[in-house]
Image (cartoon, rainbow, N blue to C red; front, top):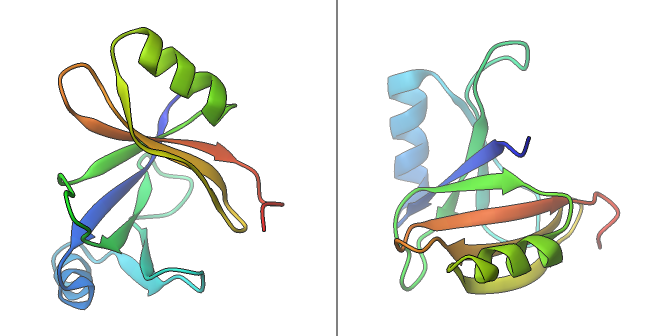
Length: 122
């Protein structure tokens, strides 16, 4: 079964949001050493239920928190999403060291991210 594996929070001021979530929930948040401003959120130990997430700088048209769903193929799942009334918001793109992702909308307008893990992506 395909599962939600990550959540993403948009922020106008990521540093302020980092302080908020660290202070309220005790989460560990570290700036990612990647090609974009992104902060990785660890919500707890791997052996406990839950998922981790990230904070990204808010972009034009951001719609709030987004859940990421792990899929075996972004291309195949974009086709499935479009085939049942969903749409693509941001097409497939490569994230170095992570894999591929695309942002989509379900038929009711909710945004979701589908992610295909491939750590060899440069």
